[in-house]
Image (cartoon, rainbow, N blue to C red; front, top):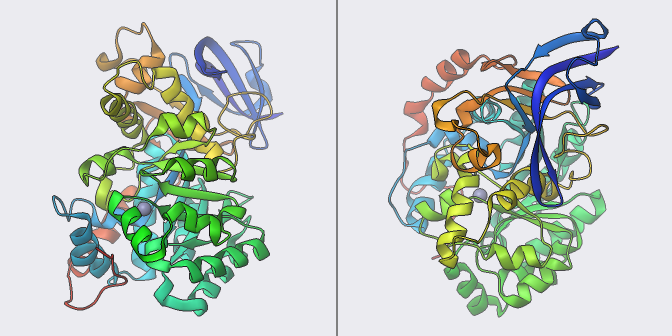
Length: 442
Ligand SMILES: [Zn+2]
């Protein structure tokens, strides 16, 4: 018996940097794994517990969102058009002091609903009250790499509490939840705290997810205060000895790139945030030439407004072409390589998911291809990068379980989530003078 049979879909394949489409295929799934892929009609539906007719739909791997603050959907659209320092110090850090664990649970569920609707099956989340985020991930059926963000001023006791979180949730929900450590950034922790974080990560056998070199000013501040770049500080403190997810890394020096090339690391890219905040553009050609995995990321919706990685894929291509003033940079196949392979490599799951092949984890999104905005279909690959919308995602499967079918979420009651959040908004958007969770140095 097989658990799920997807009948008659088209399949996106990525092989050695080239995309191809195979038409009219059946996908059989058993125990959360892709069991067989074969031309349509050769698997007897009587042998399947559940059958999904998928004629005309395009099957692609689930997307991995490599850096997010999912519950920040609670602050979506609240702060616009201010400097990064003001965004943190006058708005976000004060607003975040209002959050309760229950707020975070409902915010996480709202963000997860948006991600599932966008074909995302895994997220690397970096936030607070992470037990509630873990509960939301468990309840929703998606995958996550979760860290409890911690600032240097919170001290070793708080770091130890995040170690306890790692132990509580590691491998829970059938292995869908992975937990790491999450010191916030070099500029909010300093080298001693990073050294301590790296030591705890080594003892736990886990990785570290951290912001680094988000702006040129941060790099200059680090050079002034510590005499090293933020990336060099990560190396010197032992952070790069463990697996890492580095959020942003827009301004690596050539020496930084060499350091990163020798480390078990990956970089998360959220170009919409970079454009909105006027931060800059990462030198992806150089980073990729050095063999460093790059994945798409949404960052938080307070800066990015959506958790839509199709939008990020498009903006990643456009910003790279714009930076280079060269339309041949970042071609369609390379964007899809980053979207579907790079993200899973950053999550250190690239050998298990990201390809629709026998033996891989069954994380699959089925996209509608009948919209006028994707017609004609000379190139489904070009359509995916430049024309498709997250709302084209019709059905989403994670670990072999259907989480959304024909745009209907099966694990999340959206009306309830919106109702729970609506009654919290008035309290959440108050700023109390002098109350903030951290300080952004500027
Ligand atoms: Zn971030």
